[in-house]
Image (cartoon, rainbow, N blue to C red; front, side, top):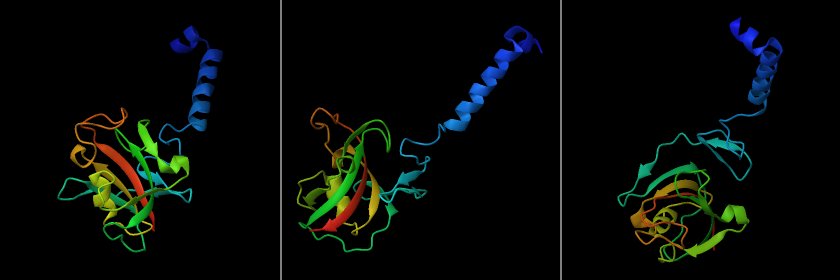
Length: 168
């Protein structure tokens, strides 16, 4: 009762209404793409669970498949079309540094030809067409101690969401 007397019953009701309105209209646990944590926003507009643990390759590349593919795997030197988004600190953070998805234009490269970072060559060499993965690229499989373009600092671990769209 002391709070009501000092603050005023009317003011306390207004404050309670504002708090309820905020909780009813916002969800601090949903990302800007509408998906809750622990999920990924798919190209189909749905949110898929990504409860899978990361696997680690012998080179230190970490990866997990978030959508299985059903097509063939590229041969060394084969040109592929892929979508990707890349972050500096973790997946789906405000530190996204590049995204073919955001541009609406897939990226094309030859797998295993050394034209992309080593972590990409390694990951895409074992993916099937249609497969989507999250990969964590350690500095030695990324841009190393030199960094890249003033955007990626030296020694950075890179976080990518990649999808193999087609073999060309």
